[in-house]
Amino acid sequence: MLRRIFSGGSGTTVDHPYPVIAVDHAGGVHVAFSDGMTVFLMSSADGGGTWKNPVPVNNPEDLDTSPATAPWVFAGDSGRVGILWVGSRGETDYALTPDAFAPVPTFAYVRIGESQANTNLPSAVADAFGNANIVYGHTQFSRQVAGDGLIFSPFMISVGSIKTETGVKRVSFSVRQDFSGNLTYLDEQRRISLRSTHFTSSKRSDQKFSITGRGTLQDESEVSFTLVAPEPSTKERSFSIAMSNGYFAGGVFQNSAPTVMMHR
Image 1 (cartoon, one colour):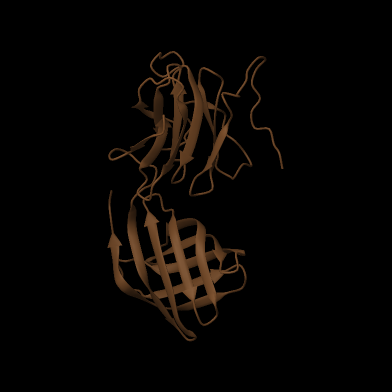
Image 2 (image 1 turned 180 degrees about the vertical axis):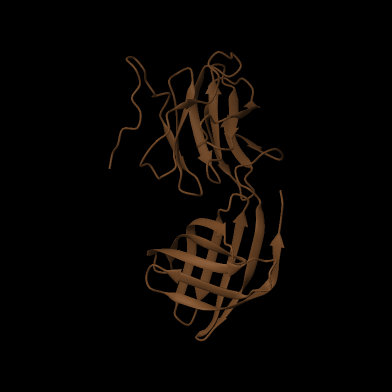
């Protein structure tokens, strides 16, 4: 379904050369476009249902970062967005915002490439550690080695098994500092294999934490799920998982490797 999310004033165009879109790990959608002078970012926290007003990424009054055209956008954890653009002399700039959903998002800037004639359009992805990997200029490559990234390092990683009345199930999950993360779950007896596509965790008052989200089963069908597991600092071992297809399993959680608590 097509939907208009922005309409500029008379004479405004956003074909410099075209808008670009990215989706973060929590399902937030981010669109970058240029009016020929300024790169703008628009973000939606609900998958495109509603949108924040456009915010300027570069300062159009700063001759170092404008005019700005040919944007590229990529994302990591919820609201963490990177934007590239090309200047009038063929230089390439990169900006990162740690929270595109903030009332007034802030951006940190760095120049990636100096002036080049007939430069190519830039593009980039975040690697598994959240570092920007950027292609720009005349097929040049630059990799971020320091500074803020697009992905929080996990602060908890757990791998283990759940002993239930119907057999042993296997589970692994990692939780990031913003309580997003990843989950895989395997029940060989009932031929259930789940891999999360969206993940949110929260602490409870009973020395447990819950993980809710959506995931894909072995047949590519989608389900929602809720997992309840003990906090690492407790002796509680009870574990349960329920899915929207009616699946449920509960038992005793046993680590096959120690739960790791990490800090970036």
